[in-house]
Length: 158
Image (cartoon, rainbow, N blue to C red):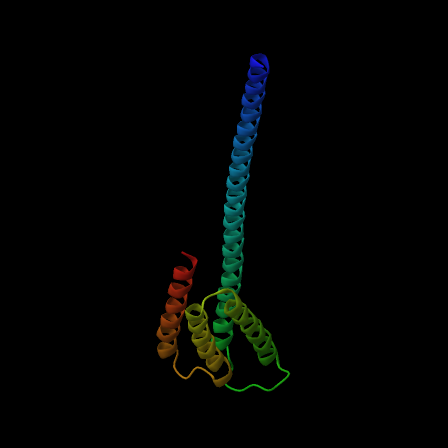
C-alpha cells in the first residue's frame, strides 16, 4: 500500500506539472498572440495615416495648381468676350477643374481647411467671370486668402 501511495503521489505530481506547464504555455502563447496583434494593428494604423497624408498632399497640390491657373485666367480676361471664343472656353475648363479639386478638399480635409479653400475659390471665380477692376487691389486680397488657406492646410497636415 505504501508503494501504491508513492506511485499515486508521483502520478499526481507529474500530472500537476503537466497541467501547470500547459497552463503557463497557454498563457504565454495567448499573451504573445495579443501583443503581435496589437503590433500589427499599430503598423496598419501608421501605414493608413501615411497613405491618407500622401493622398491629402496630392489633392492639395492639385488645388494649388488649379487655383494658380484660375488666377492666371482671371488676369488674362479680355474686356469683352463672347461664348465660344478661346478665353471663355479655357476659363470654363480651368474653373471646372478648380471646382472639382475644391470638392476633393471638402472630402479629405477638416471643415476649416475646406472653408478657407471655398472662400479663396469663390473670390477667384468672381475675378474670372466678373472681371478684375483693379489689379492692385486683387493681388493683396488673393495673397491673403491663399495664405489663410495654406496655413489651415498646413495645420491639418501636422
